[in-house]
Image (cartoon, rainbow over all chains, first blue to last red; front, side, top):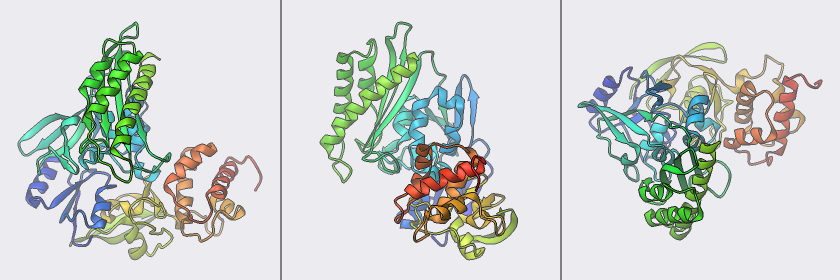
Length: 288
Length: 161
């Protein structure tokens, strides 16, 4: 890891300039819990590391328009300590807080988890289910992109080489709505998802589902939004027929590999089961 | 590679060191400041042997670049005891024989301190989950967990030392 310059710009514009100046040889760093491991292992060989944490707004949580703006580099521990954010989006927070150890939670961020672009990234299916939008800045100005459009393949994103994910916009939460995230690992802590599933639901006064979104992870080259799975719940009271449709839609969307963590068949089955269970947890939270 | 002067506070003392070139905070603590209590087990954030507290937050010093320490308040194992008076955690680790080879012990002590700083009365389950990122290959963890529970009680002054 010798021969690496460290920059800590104070503005997004300075960070974009530094990215352009480096011409593809720079890497952005939020918490660094993936990047520094990759550099150490020789998989990433940047000449410049641009630390985003010194930029105002990149770390921290603020209310805006009834929703939240969450800085892309905000560490997981800070997310978990924000009672209002946790109350509004418990599924996103439980997903983010599943990543790594206490030590990793002190550093690891939603922005890093998304842009590292692992299909097994725990927070991403939950962010997709929650309908969260990325606020991106580059030399051409600002643009927005839904979370489900960011990952384009393992380790690859839709961000241009000189663009920066600045923050996430969480929508204003409707009454009687909530979310949940479940992951499968063969232990309780410190592991990478075999499968992950996030679900958000909204209910009407009589408990009928009026809207639902389902995100799944570790079952395709990218995390996925499964629109048909959400649609399967809408208009239902989470009866067995609706849940069976949700399970079928999730299974149909899965394109997993078989590896040491699980076979394709196992992952597909577990994705369906986790999505069903997460939907019921989200429903119970929404009606609580 | 550029190295810059990094100014930080380590265990209450202002320090300056040359940092950069992809050097980790752990390397800076051990090689520049000669504070060798923090250990390198894995170097990838999995084992917790390099756990230190930065601005009140538990982190792996191997997963932080040295220049990131600029202006930060860092607590390491070298600052845990008060002179020759051991911290209650250190005392209880000895009482319970909560170590064998000792390589993981500085990290476990700092992680436990970070827990008790924010939660003076943790349940055993909370202790076990909080310490999940600190590997110990000798003890089987049970003595460690009991030591942390008893140190918490000591710090709450529930029972005499």
